Length: 105
Image 1 (cartoon, rainbow, N blue to C red):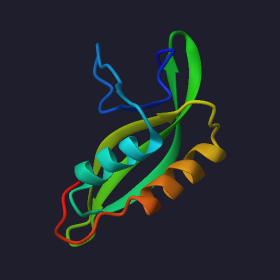
Image 2 (cartoon, rainbow, N blue to C red; image 1 turned 90 degrees about the vertical axis):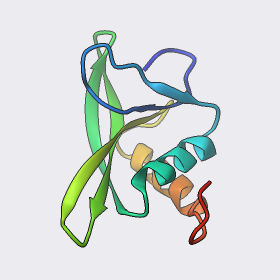
Image 3 (tube, one colour; image 1 turned 120 degrees about the vertical axis):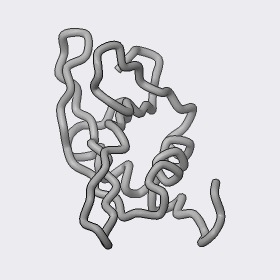
Image 4 (spheres, rainbow, N blue to C red; image 1 turned 45 degrees about the horizontal axis):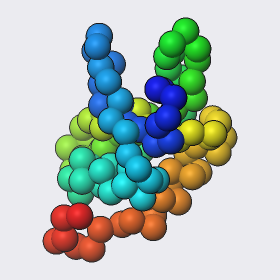
């Protein structure tokens, strides 16, 4: 991810895709909650090549448990996190920011 971004979400992998930067882990978690639209979340380790370097990221998926369909929200990046700590840090932030029922943050 670009230098200077501590928290980012890359919504898709199409050519020219640009990451969306967030000022805090809390802001990133809020964005993910908004995009999941009440569906269950799945977090998966992934690696993306950026500026000719492999970077550990977290693939964020929303699962509609009623239909079984899965939709990619994007790839989250947390500066300094590796494949082990990244999902743990993101999961903790998501748990801390669980929206109240009927409240859109």
